[in-house]
Image 1 (cartoon, helix red, strand yellow):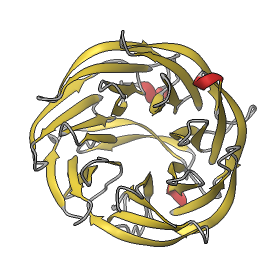
Image 2 (image 1 turned 90 degrees about the horizontal axis):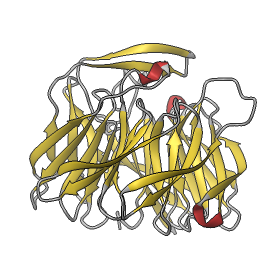
Image 3 (image 1 turned 180 degrees about the vertical axis):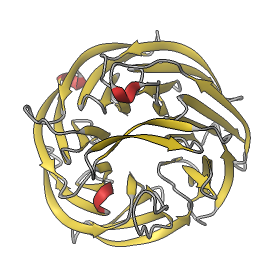
Length: 375
């Protein structure tokens, strides 16, 4: 069987010296040979550092840049690889505290323009949702039937947290819940926000706000489809929290949280990506700094977690990863060593083991399973 993954990342040399990436790629996994056999260009796009696709219509939403001086969002047709729609943000200055893993140093990152850090797409209602870390805002975009962006809205969010990286709200995630509401992560302000969405106009109305623990730094979510539980990835705390979503009230309730890195580890680490297995019995998290994948077993119908494994990614700064179609492999991108690593996954017990290392690919920061989508 041949499985497919879409790879997104940076195309500029400023992120990776001598970067050869030209945009969005497709990685082919031969599940019989247990290895990636091909990586080919899907779309020539500038800095598609985050992508998501619509399951119904062959369209990929991406963040992007233009001429190295303006950021925005776009829609790519997966069959042709063409960028069919774009919307660029005003050239607003952005700056934030960042961490250089290669030098083990914090630094102040000054940006002459701003680009979202997360994007998602609702193909049925023709709406894009984007989270802007640099300018602390949510963006929404309304599209017509041809996926041309016809209107946009920006929702600034105020707030900060106790850590140096939390000088502002730093919005890092915006995606629909199963009931159609939008859930948003404020990494810098330690909050989760839930909004009602007017799909005719792409406008938002705040429904509720949830306070994470100070310094937790909510970055991304894994949203269960079979239960009401949501797993909250804390980048700054390197922890994962379990919250329960009430569909009737639109509110969240805290259940528990767990450390993603081994007890006693004192080096810098920030959790980066989170995925549920297809059967929702196991949870996977990547850790930048500790450079590992942590595996949790999901207990009590989704309410609690048990850490069962922590395995190294054989590279530096594992930014993102994805499970294969049947959940029997996991493909992870090590951003700072410009390579991918393929793990075998035990679908019954959840454990990972190395299948293939040293898969070269420059500046990859997004891995997205897409076998059926690309069929």
